[in-house]
Each structure stands twice: as structure tokens, then as C-alpha cells.
Length: 180
Image (cartoon, rainbow, N blue to C red; front, side, top):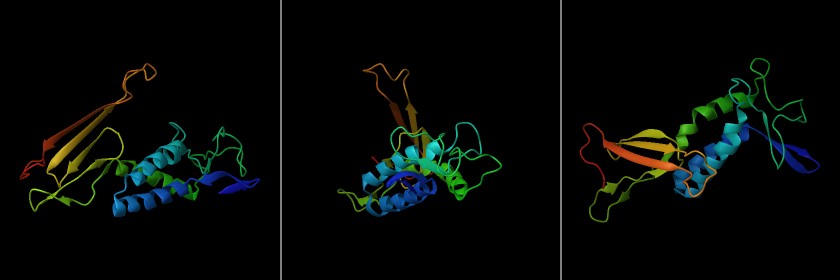
């Protein structure tokens, strides 16, 4: 973190990586949805914006904070916050590469199963934490889940929905039964 006039002006990109690991563990321990909400915001705001568009190897070391700040602007330690493909390799490069590889970790969350009211068997549960087109082999339920998310165009014409979400299931081969 860098302070300028007593105010935080940026953070190392590694901090998002570390706080996401903590939030994921808290979500596992507590099952509290606010940790999942935080993980989504941290991934969108603190991870996705650190890769410079379609330019591989150009990542951001210090993420500017505050209204109206620019990632391209002069940083306190160099002319631009962006790294270069061959001359820069800060610690954040490694953690950011891993963070991009882990983006799918936060789409689904399976809490501990709870006992059914009508039988002694536990009922598997699954939370959809992010609306991202994806598939999941859900062994606990004997299902394959398909999540498709479409964004209608254009977004600016209400009352059209912002998202169209389609969830479908198929039974896994050899599964004894599927939940209701």
C-alpha cells in the first residue's frame, strides 16, 4: 500500500489474491453468503482489471484506488502501472496468473449437506455464487449441472432483463438417484 498525504492511493495486486483465499475459507466455515458476494466483487474489481486487455504479460502491479484514478497514469514508482512482457516480473505476476486460473473456483459452492426432514439421508445443497456460463459434475447429487448465462443486447433498453439464466441438469451415468 502506498500513502500519499495520508490517503491510500493504491494496493499491491497480491492483496486481492490473499484476501480471496481468506474469504473462500470463511465461506467454507460459515456458509455465509456475504463471503461469496465479497469474492465476486473482489474477483471483478481486483483481479479481472489487472490484465491489460488482450496483451499477454502486461499486468498491473499497483492497483490504483479511488474515484477517477487511472491504471495507465503515472504511479509513484514508475511512469505507468502496467508491466511489460519481458522486463517486468513482480511477485504479483505469479499470484495474478494463479488468480486468473482460479476464477472458476467461485462459481459454485457446496455447503455441508443437511439432514432431510422426511428421512435420515442428508440432502446435498449447491449455491450458484456467480452467473457465469459453466458446467459442474455434482457427484454428491449424481448430476451434471449446465449453467448458461446470456446478456441480451442492448442493455440500455428497459424493461428487457439484464440476464437470461438457464439451469439444466442431467443424471450422471451410474447414479443411483437424483434429488428432488
